[in-house]
Amino acid sequence: MGTRGMGEYPLSNLYPSDETITLNDWLTDSSLQPGSLTNRKSVVRLIEKYNERELSQIIADIKEGRESAYLVSKRFVDGIRKTHSPYSVSTLRSMLPGLWESTIGPRFARKVFDRICPNGASYIVHTKAIPERQHVIEMLKVTTPFYRALIAVLACTGMRIREALSRKWIDVEVRSEGHARIMLRAEETKAKYLRYTFLTRECVDFLKAFEQSEYLFPGFDSLHISYDSAHSAIKNAYRQVGLVDNSAKGEFFTPHSFRNFAGEQMRDCGLLERDVLAIIGHKNRLGAEIAYLDWKKIEKRWVEHCAAKMCFLDTGAIVQKQVVELTRQNGKLELLLERLLERLEPNNP
Image (cartoon, rainbow, N blue to C red; front, top):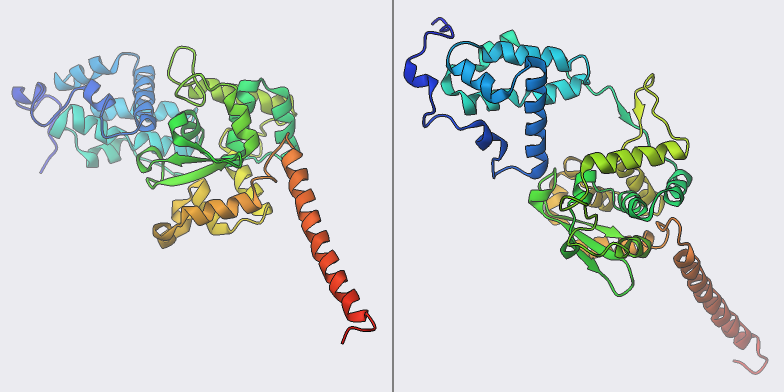
């Protein structure tokens, strides 16, 4: 069976039907998380850039037979191949079939799309460089109090940047000991499972300076600061401490670098690997164990191993814990010595 040309469809297929939705409906799909909706808007902007007109007009032209969804897609993909990594190209391209099927309906065929607009190789060419602990400490010293709090939270919890920015105070449970537990609901995470992460007393103190909004990181003209603003401030902090991207090696310092940093810090503190993966949110590596996580025990182990050691500027907690531990050890030694002396007493049987 041959493929119909653009002008061979019945007139009824050129107008809205039960099989299509509007572009605005596609951009505001209530089943998607904010991050996914943001990605859809980015795709629309890029389609418009490389086709030099608004997508609403492009869709109208396709329905009237004046344009081809496949050629529009080809211009888009050819354009982003010059500026994006192969992995990003593949990810952005994968959103197009859903867009066309939703807005122009059955006149779009995936087989034709794959032939005219092939995917190409998909691989990651960039790696996330990981800062050293001393670099993080220096970053906390040179940034403003607001971004000091953000960097400290990312470096302590391993949250993704959008997860951190969207946190509200209602998600934070501050414990009597000073540390806090943060809840991330399943629908708010990339891995789609409920998880918790934890803040040191130091991070809680940093955040309390801005406890003036329902969000941990309130914005000036929005509910919370934007990803672009946070990304720009963090990149500037990297540069201030001498951490610059190495494009030749494909190594880049990004907000995501703190996920790896936080994981390594927890491991260095002696936290169990399973606990680290659960806190960071590595669902695939957890496998079936994800269904058997005991968050009370995970928090207890995190407090024991990490709560003091993962303070970056406030070393008082670390020193205090060391003093307590030393006192306890001295107490044990004194008791042992006392018992030994009792045994050495001449009248002691």
